[in-house]
Length: 299
Ligand code: GRG
Image (cartoon, rainbow, N blue to C red):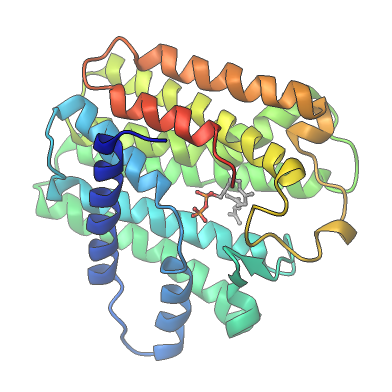
């Protein structure tokens, strides 16, 4: 159960982000690439990262409405998230045929177009950020936000985490440190970037930006560990996972490393750590409620 206030905020945020993504992703020529990009962007994602960006912005600015100023970067984050999922599903990576209960991008459009659709979404995210920075007079906080986002998506973030994942698949990961590094980079970075971008755009002081960074980092870990737990206990509920999962190479997850019980304890540990960093702020209630909701989710 979530409060009416959070439910209304989630609905409003999803509506605004959806409309903004529609504006950004008008179908043009060549049609096939726009169709492939739109197929995955509008495939029913939760829009969690844009929501975190909006809520972090709102925590700092205390604005109750969704300010237009935050929508470009929030949408750019979702474009990058979508690109990562398309590429992650490719035969050369996870070789998944289903995502969110639907055939994956390469199953529908072929591998070449799926690769290009992912690339195109990443490029579009950069273009959206540049246009946004120019439109608001090249303000330093906006440039810092965009820089952080592309840092978090790159080798020090998502791509680096994916490399650790791929190079350790099929064998036991060497250490606890490497397991954490992999997930901090692969999953937490983009989640923490969502919070940092929201804070920066709202003009937060450095210590507030750092707190939201720390919040996002811990929430990202809790979210990933809960995802690993659900993969084991909730297979029937969790829609859209690969049908080839059982015959795949061994994946290193928090559950394979620690076992189910300890993994669930870690979900609680990291979500509490996330909450502890932001609970001192007025206006952090919705972020805290969202954290509790996410870590108790069943799918
Ligand atoms: C290919 C560069 C590159 C990176 C791939 C992010 C990533 C690295 C792979 C995605 C696969 C994965 C299991 C990531 C862990 C994080 C996670 C649980 C992603 C799914 O995020 P949700 O639940 O997805 O927010 P929706 O479908 O709601 O958008």
